[in-house]
Structure formats: C-alpha cells, structure tokens
Amino acid sequence: MFTSRRAQREDFKIIASFPQSQDEQFYMFPRGTFPLDPVHLEEVAKERLHPTVILSGEEIAGYCNLYDVEADSRCWLGNVIINPDYRGRGAGKFLLDTMLTTVRDELHLPELHLICHNPNTAALKFYHKNGFIPYGLKEMVDYKEQPIIGILMKKYCEPC
Image 1 (cartoon, rainbow, N blue to C red):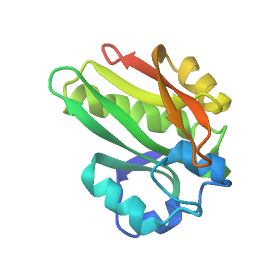
Image 2: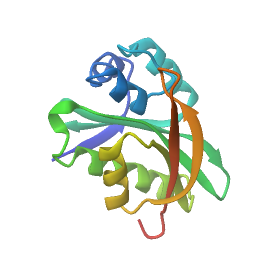
Image 3: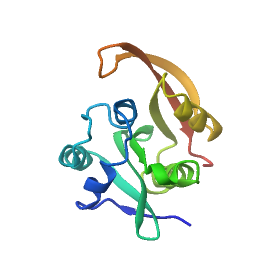
C-alpha cells in the first residue's frame, strides 16, 4: 500500500500542511512555527540524514528524518509528520519500519532513539506498541514556555 523515497524540495509545502494544531506542530517539529514554514522544514532536512517521505500512490502520507548519528551506536528519529488522512491507517508503522531498516541496513547502527513529549499520549502509545522502550526523561518547555517532559525512548534494530 505504501512506498518510500527521499524527500524532494516540492514535498515540503505539502508536508507543512499536515499539522492540524499548534500542539501537533510542536510535537512534530519543536523548532518550527505554526503554521509550519515549508522553507524552514526543508532547511532542517538538509542538516539531517535520510529525509524520507512515504507515499500512497502519488500522495504523501508521511515524512521524517534521522539526526545525531553516533558511530557504531545509535541515531535519532526526528520530525515524524503523518498526513491526517493516513493516521490510523498504517502510515506511521510503515514510516517507522522504513527508518528502522535504514538505520540497520544502511547506517549499520544497533539502536534508533527518539524523544516523545509527555502530553502526546497517542504517539507514546504508538511507539510503545512498536517496541520502543522508555529509558530516561528530559526537562523541556513547550511553545507556550510551559514545562513538559521529553521521554527518551529506544528500539534495538537487531532484529527490527
């Protein structure tokens, strides 16, 4: 049902339209603004590894990237943004599996890490269901300057 490819310049305008609220945008791209600026999203993607989109036919169903690769150790999953029309339809799982395969087979790393914000219950449930294990907490502030907790999670990529 889904395929994947590297993100292209014209994709970012479409991806930027996916967050439905300022809270969603913050969870997906904490350094961004609401509404999400496609130019800023593209600039960040240039600093990261494997900016990836998944497609349902020709339609973009999701996007994410990898960052902070630590040789022989781990990297981090960033900017997970799913098209609202594809939420709950397997797009997130396909995107996550695509990135786990990239981490394992292309980067040859044993672990994929991420930070999930504590108010984002749906994402916490999703990552837990898909084998991510919480291992730490990071004190943060949201876009309203309110304290939140970033829950550090990881998944071992052997086997994914």
